[in-house]
Image (cartoon, rainbow over all chains, first blue to last red; front, side):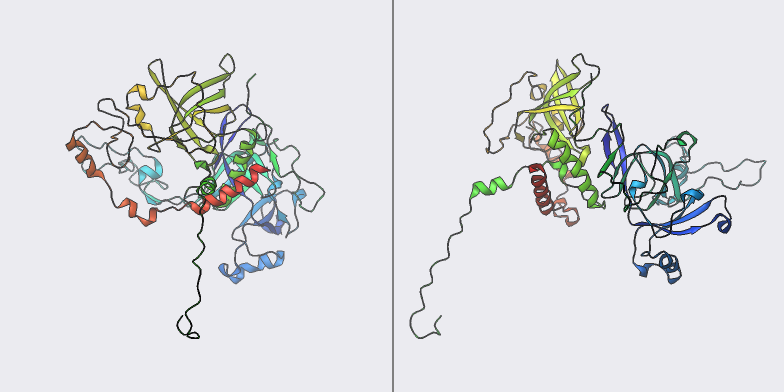
Length: 242
Length: 246
């Protein structure tokens, strides 16, 4: 994570996400998958073939691509279908776009109720016998049972969670890095899934994005760094207020 | 060697003396700002490389001078509320923290009998000028104890003129021993964990001995805490000098 500054001098924290060897692996049509839209399977970081079982190598051989560490599905409309085997780059996203990032949260192991669910616990003194971080009462008398889903101690973290509506501030096309506002679930150097935001406020936010994706061998030549309008670029002189 | 023709061994001239030019050696150890040295951790060094590119870009446009903890600086920042739209603050640098773009430094001064500390970000675009009025080092890396010292040691004239300094002179180390206000202090500065050399402790002997109870003499031998930055520093210095010459 890194700080960036806007043109008015305010500081924002930004997470750097690197797009490492992403390829489209397979196209699954609407009827095949049984969902509402067609799906595209996309693979992430390259990994040695010995770390995956032989059965998993099929998809990668069909697409003609080295085995990937993570495979995710994206629900896609019919006009955005991409041929399997095309590489995906960071320039697929543009600064000013809003994005949802999904990742596996940091695993905290078996945790008590105060850390896991934010319970208040009990006071430290004034006669409390061996009860300082316990959940207290678990259900009512009339219920005569504990309801399903009761918040209790257990394994915390290491589950998929999404941060919604994160703004993309900057894109580095040379090294394929996306600068995303705020924090993102997961530890450093973990794999995350980045997707166009599905929040209703950001429905019409994408102004002319590369559709269906950015093709590196196309005619478009992008500069090394793409900035949002509000970012202070370090090539400018210091901020002055009128 | 006695096993040759029986004649006395050939005269071997003594080895040529290696002349170590102290001046060039000193020039090689040029100043590297501490925020360039990456901290020890599991982050990809590529992230620090990308951050360094931004820092170098900023340094090309705006000059960040060499300064240490203990030097007196004057910083002008842009401020929308001020009448001239800019503010100037003079103070002694008591701490330099943070790595990468988020590097900060804290300036302290006593204005109208009120101690004021301001924490500035080195790479913030609001900073319009940093001037070094007096470049010097002190005996410690962290001068937070000036909060508990007598106010005369933290007062600096707001209209102070920059002290002239010859180029290629060694940075002077001010061996000033500061006198403190009576206890209680904000932190127990006599304890060995702070390792402060710049205070003239006027505490009784038994209190100084009692403070040594908290010493951890094994820490300096702990191999897991070792972080040798010499090679990393060399690489970064090379990179910096190449980029700034462009």
